[in-house]
Amino acid sequence: MRRTSGPGEPSASLETLVAVALNPRGDGIAVIRLEKEKLKEQAAKTPPDVSFRKLKDVAVLKIPVLVEKSVGQVRDVLVQMPERLIVDLRGNAGGAFDTIARVAEPFLQPSAVVVTLVSHEGTSDYVTPGPDGKRRRAAFVVLVDEETNSGALALAAALVDHTKAKVAGRLAKRISGTVTTLRPLSLDRGKLGDGYVRFPTGGLKRPNGALLADGLKLDIPVNATGEAAVAEAVKAFK
Image (cartoon, rainbow, N blue to C red; front, side):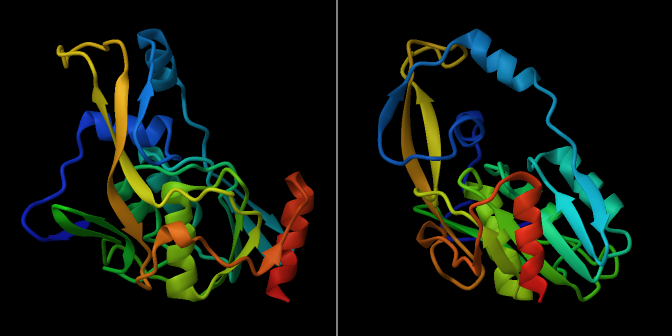
């Protein structure tokens, strides 16, 4: 769900969605050469599923991507919210803001701001829908790595700001706190031309009002990978 204010609603063009999906990191102006077959190949890939498992008194929810099917999968596995939950966002580079807000629904109260987009057209608050179910109090630890960025980092920040979740793992050296748009260089907008120009069109703010580009505070730095990283994240509950 989106709430807007300002002279107009920010538009989400196909070029914007492609920019966020293909390269959520990086600001400034750049020329990107894209092959049509490569775009088709990436669009045809089946995104991985959300997974859920229990480790004694702690549960682990792995969200590898933030796409439409992730909404229902997260909701299904969290019908009964565990008291202690690790939200594993490692390798997740983000997704569409409406989708992120809906993924956050089981964790937060209805109409809670997940992320705010600020642009020359005004501001847009992406909030959780609801009420669509009962939220339970739980303790959360968000597990991140160098590939956790953009919308996934916004989801992590929302859990920190609204639920006092702790953050474990490693942060990307360059945080993507902007929304970039791709515009084709070709005059024929219906086809892929020689390349695209990418430029920033908006900035992202977390629920507490801070810029997402400023990053998150790590409560528990974790250099380990795989299951060893999960074991380190469990320590944040103690």
